[in-house]
Every structure is written in C-alpha cells, then in structure tokens.
Amino acid sequence: MQFCDECGSMMKADGDRMVCSNDDCGATVERDRERERAFVTTEAQTDDDVIESDENANFEGKPIASDVRCDDCGNAEAWYALKQTASADEPPTRFFKCTECGHRWREYN
Image (cartoon, rainbow, N blue to C red):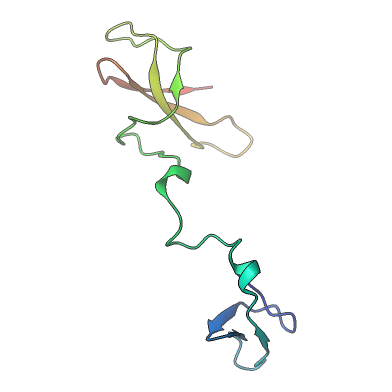
C-alpha cells in the first residue's frame, strides 16, 4: 500500500503511475516496480500465515503441544491454536484437539 506524499491519502495504480485517491489532491507519481515486489497482495497470500482460532476448526497441520493430556484417551499430544478471548492484558486462550481421538478442549491461562 502506498500513500500520497502530498495529502496522506491512499494511492491507487493507474497504468505506469500511482494516482492519489483523494480527488481534491490529484497527485501522481511513477510506479516503483521494485518496491511493489516487496508488498504482499491478496493473490500472493497463503493460508499458512493464518492462525485458526475457530473452536470447531480442523486443527490437523497446526502446531503440536506436548505439555497437555487428553481427558478422554490420555494422549500427551494435541494440535493447538491461540485466540485472544479476553482483554489484551490477559493471556490468550489455547484451543486443543487431541491427535489420537480428536477430543477438543480449551485452556485458560
């Protein structure tokens, strides 16, 4: 994302130029293709960056915790995901899914 040096509004691509989205400003600059390669676009994003926080989500492939014990089968490994369920000064909640039986639970710190 690029912002206008004149007014601070967001710039949008128009061919080989970047045009200020503020109609009152009208500033334009030449597009910097090298700089644009460093940007991540929605087309280039993958789901690998996403942390699944839905309690009912498919956890397979997520990080594995080995400091837990499943109440249903006694297994000591579970996939987990973090979600900030309280205020920012509180620790996040960990949602688990047992790697053996699929039992799900949460842990509040």
